[in-house]
Each structure stands twice: as C-alpha cells, then as structure tokens.
Length: 48
Image 1 (cartoon, one colour):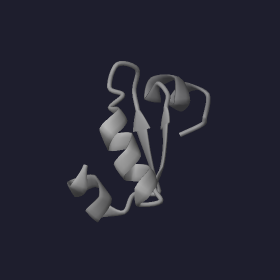
Image 2 (tube, rainbow, N blue to C red):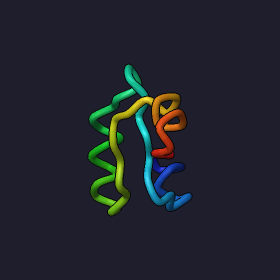
Image 3 (cartoon, rainbow, N blue to C red):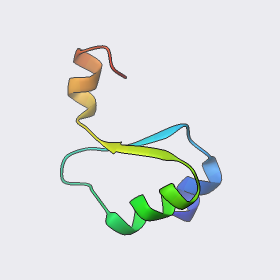
Image 4 (tube, helix red, strand yellow):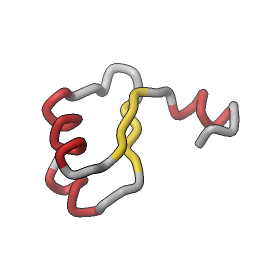
C-alpha cells in the first residue's frame, strides 16, 4: 500500500477479486480515490 501511496495516483481501481480492505483504508487515509470495478468493462464503456 505504501508504494501506491507514494506514487500519488489520481485513483486506484480494484478489479473483482482484488479487493483489500487494509489497502483501501490506507488509500482513503491518504486522500486517494479508489473503487471496485472491472477495467475491461470500463474500457469497453469509455469509463476509463
């Protein structure tokens, strides 16, 4: 989680099955947006 926080991404996408509550809490604490979604669906529907 710390490596991700250091990169300061605009958002983090957790694909189905990759959800990690501890990482999600750390991202929230750092003010980094995250959500659970399928990147393949997001690409197909122009949401990525």
